[in-house]
Image 1 (cartoon, rainbow, N blue to C red):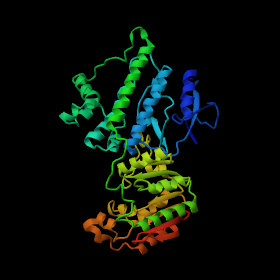
Image 2 (tube, rainbow, N blue to C red):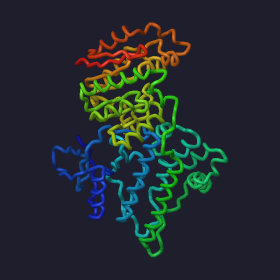
Image 3 (cartoon, rainbow, N blue to C red):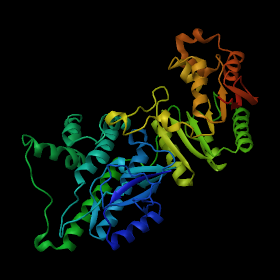
Image 4 (cartoon, one colour):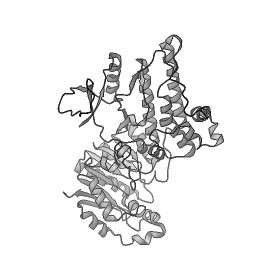
Length: 449
């Protein structure tokens, strides 16, 4: 499967650069095809006399509101790097948005083949500078200063935040900080009372001196890189959940070894090609699946845990795509007629032959108040074959902590009732009770529909 775009021919220098970037895995590969080929199915609305290009599909498309802070930083750095390389051949990116980037595992790849545009001779600056500030830099500043979740910003503002919108969310002292002053405060004060006014396009160096234009633009891009590094931490912080899968209250050392061993045995037995890890935490078991040869999409609601997993996967070059998401409220369809960004559940359909649901279902039962049968039914729609699931009993300390004063409402949930609900959709292939507690792991096979 592939998707198509159309464009006028690129000059040789640009084409050579794009081929170099494609070989490096930074720009999506493409190949020219015959627009008259009936297998391409361009459609009646396709403009005539333009060339058709075909691209491979990304395994699992994701969106900026699902990315961790480190992932957004990496996408921003890739955008700047590509623009710097295009500058060498007299071109630039005409837009700068997270929507131009997707992830293959932990690795960002630029997918907008129509973004390059020629620069004017001697042009000083970057045509997409303001958009880069709005979509990449300002969200990171607000996240750092006000702890504003990045997902909130990108869900409500596809094109980022303007300096004026960000200015209203900052204190007087925050507005005076050096990085904030140049990115938010001065642009806001400068444009006050000038709504609708036009200041023209980018200026060019006298006599259209291309060397000076490139040098000035290069310094501008370098400054953006320094701004990003100022606001984004290179390591993920600890959170209340970042140590959850370690030996301690939830697992004895023996219990943790038994859990890891069971999952390793299940991976070796089932040899899945694609694994969806729901409630992945910091990704201990996502890493096991990736090392067993599976492509992994790992999801958790704790952004810091996801960020830690992304840094690990990127460093160790593991095929893991970590995403920030509340599984009780998964990503909805977005955009015009709900057609621009697909919902999470649609993207997972028929994509994974194994789902990991470890220490997860009690969260859905208690926090989201979803009946057990509905949870199991949902999981059966997420996997085409295998499910590895963990039962956490009612009297487990973590279950009791989540349930609080409503704990008595779940006293009827027993391992027998859990197995009954599971066997309505799956065949239990293997089970293992963990040492030091009543938690139990199951490997189950989905029954044919």
